[in-house]
Length: 125
Length: 468
Image (cartoon, rainbow over all chains, first blue to last red; front, side):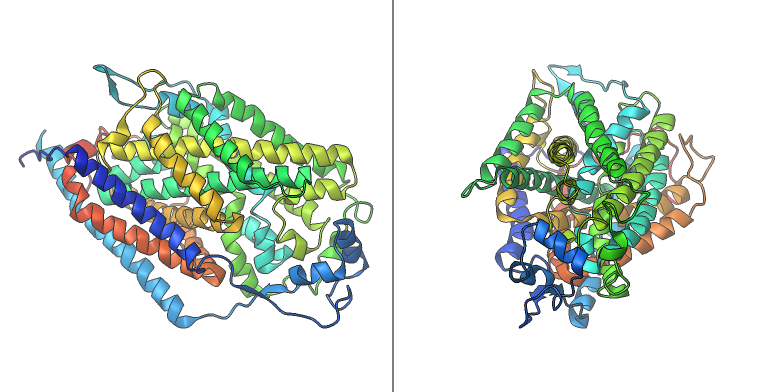
């Protein structure tokens, strides 16, 4: 197998590639934050009676909350802020498809590239 | 990670080949791994209690410990054989292929950069909370932390590994001191586990909460695999890497168990699940000013040690991508005086700063965990391919991990559970990150790969892999 000689990349081309990578990083990491899609899916289950008892806190727990500077009123939004684990099947299926497709592509395309590497490396010998 | 970076640059400067120095032993490998990870005991792991309750945080501490034991066993075998700088990146290049290596390097960069961001946020928030001055924000402390540590890395950080060792040891000893100061063998005096973790609130969401807690259970140990970054700098990879990594895992398992026991015995799970500094809070709740101040300082030191190691590792992975022309070779420049990958350090600096200001702590941690879990999924498949392409006896291995393929299967299964756990609460972030990796992979495979020299990607003196 003949040795592959890669093209030399111009400075402008390198700058363009760097820009592509930077934009991709920010879109992937920043966009979910901007769109409010990132972060925990939690919500507050409000209680009318804001007492330690109503909040499910025994005497020991209540004393610790108070030591930390909380009252039943200020602790209410922390204690009642809960996850609601409802499995959204369409989203779960989309997630599974995206993950599987990603890994399948990754391994298949890598193998194609790897064969070129191995052929060039060992055919040179 | 620091000396590793200082010496770990294989580049040509003024015609001279800069070679790696084999100066590290098992203790340094321990410091590399534990230095980055220990901050996880000071913040992050406790969000597992938020997702599933206090008992769920303990269950995942053990089960995720099993995941990381598998990671450590697999990593020790592959890295003690592929003794090349870049850790998992070099492994992927030799075993799976260039595109996988490109992705693995990105996993490393994002896992470490977002971990650095989390460290800086923790440090800033801790100082602001301690100061108690109205109107004081964490922004200046975050910026100062990231910029100063980047500057240290830019200037060369030959001594930083030893400094990190000392910092890590102090932070670890503080956990041990806290543990023994609260009379762990006695309930009711200081610790009140049976009154805080009751049958009614131990698992507030049931078993689905335990599965959901896997996401932040990863934070107990995330980064231990960073020990492999020093593969070219250790004197005896076959001995130092397995010993150092396994000792690191044992250390972390003990620290995690002590941390959970003390924190769950001192504060209600609802508070434990949302606080940014559970160990410092534990110090406060003992009523001892000495313990409070010790844990405050230890929190800062753990965050600093971790962020410093992360900057080194992320820059090193980015540098490797430039050196192999997976990214523009501009990134592969080595500073002529300081011998550091200065362009990579500078390039990643504004990215870390930007996300430290726009993301909050648990979002930054989730970004880091996502990249980590994608990497562990790769590792479980990678070891299977490694054993198939070069069966035992075909090449010299520094270390052969036992019970193959059991650790790989356990690792893969636990990764799948963790993906599901991330879906429970942070699903959109998972999809967005995976789509990013997918698109950037298409860009690499169909465009960028043309700049890569093919045969140069395989540098190990091994026979041709079976099946090729």
